[in-house]
Amino acid sequence: MKIRPLLLLSALLISALPAARAASSNLDPKALELLKSMSSTLSSAKAFTYKSRSIVEAPSRTGQFITLFSNAEVSVQRPNKISACLTGEAPNFCFLYDGKTAAAYAPGTKTYSESPAPSTIDAMLPALENETGIRFVTAPLLLSNPYAVLTKGLESAIVVGPAKVDGVACEHLAFRSPGVNWEIWIESGSTPLPRRMAVTFTDKPNFPRTLVEFSSWNLHPWLCQSCFVFKKPAGATEIPFRSVFKPKGR
Image 1 (cartoon, rainbow, N blue to C red):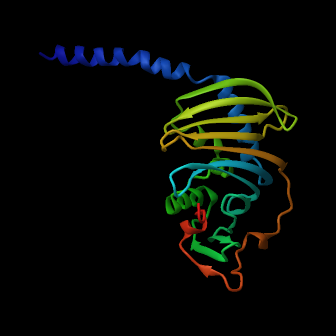
Image 2 (image 1 turned 180 degrees about the vertical axis):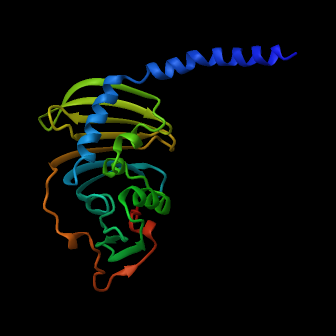
Image 3 (image 1 turned 30 degrees about the vertical axis):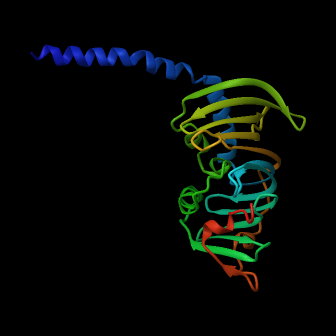
């Protein structure tokens, strides 16, 4: 009678082997190697700045998904400082984090949100997502170990092939994770940096898509410490954090 459970367990283990092998075969070691190299470049930088152009698909009040274009300038100083300013068609705002406080200011509506924050970027960004319900597709690149976050639950990884982004030679990679399909173009050569990301949220209606192109990377910037500190503008009104990031009249 004790043999039957053992036989059943053996059968279950054997039947699971093809699926496990298939999952492993979907992860191209070369794609993972290139992604890890890029992640190491970012994580080894004590500070960095970059500019980006983004295309975001967002639902309007009619239910139609509309396409919004925006630009951003981002400064990061590890382990606990971020400055980011977003302009364009998407909600315009500046975000500041100094290791103690996270704040966002929308100049168009003269509104702001301010909140005590965890003491590191690694803890603050997930907390911000939980608070606002908004996913920032570039957030993993700002963490201390981008590779660990980007490969969590990874289902497939492939090398699409060589490409150019704004004339810069890159390797185009594609990945799938639960709820998201994403691609990244990594600069070829001795300083592998992300030059483009394309993300499709497969767990959302209409599969909204975001495209980000990066430029003007600086891995050794001089950063003013006061640039990360929020100072309430005169006449600004405080509102809930999520409202700062919400489009108006769309």
